[in-house]
Image 1: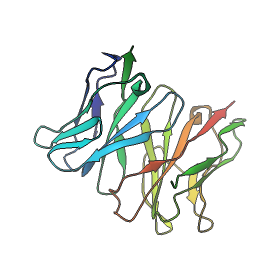
Image 2 (image 1 turned 90 degrees about the vertical axis):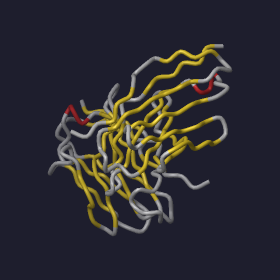
Image 3 (image 1 turned 30 degrees about the horizontal axis):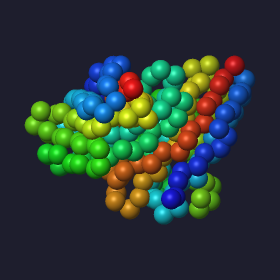
Length: 110
Length: 115
């Protein structure tokens, strides 16, 4: 069974601090990885994607991929109350199927 | 900015009834997907669709499910005889010319409630 694993949280982060989210995956055939944000009752909203080993920065977000360790992470800098949501990690296989983790709930406290 | 749209936003049906969930993918996208999310659980892949045929389907996507692209804009998911366990949020997604592994953009979802 190919799995994407995430800590469910909740991850409590003070406003202005850095939130660090982790994800591991078992399918070595996964081509790229995506971080989606999901507010309660809403659909997944893309934050960023990464397909090469190393870091990728986009505004307050940095994704990191380590294919040898099968590990993906997301850092959220200067966390805001509006960042409070569930963050979904997903890998995509060569057929385009997204395999989602269960998500990490982030709570940013003022 | 182009977006995926879905109708209806909420569908209530009786067990055994047929439902059709509708999606309008982003206009120049080529790959189309349905996912579902049972309350409190993971987002699960159902089916992918490209070039007017199914590319891949999950174990969930049994004979009760079908997909269709009846015209150049709509993409539908039909459940022939709904069961209580089909109650979930159903999300349509589409991706563009970057290939199957390109970024998928999700619609707002249809909440299906089976009574």
